[in-house]
Length: 81
Image 1 (cartoon, one colour):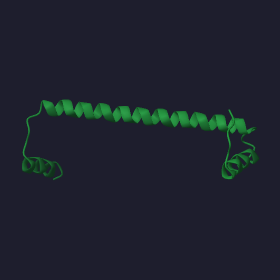
Image 2 (tube, rainbow, N blue to C red; image 1 turned 60 degrees about the vertical axis):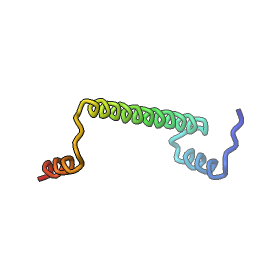
Image 3 (cartoon, one colour; image 1 turned 180 degrees about the vertical axis):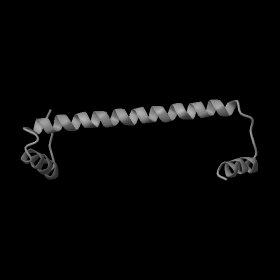
Image 4 (tube, rainbow, N blue to C red; image 1 turned 90 degrees about the horizontal axis):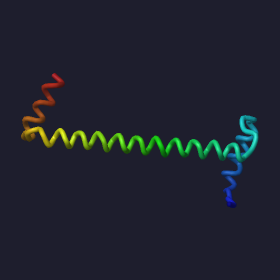
């Protein structure tokens, strides 16, 4: 696979190499790919967590009798007083 980098991307890699923290451009790209994978996994985990919370809230709401808006607002106000 051939990858063409922009001048900015090449400069970014060169700057990182000059710090001495990385030995090769490949090492920098491997690190970037690991970070991308971790980011995507964290994003997926967050989405799944939100879905579970929504599902739980829907389940609770299905077993909770409805209340009118005025009663709902008054209950919230009471909690903060």
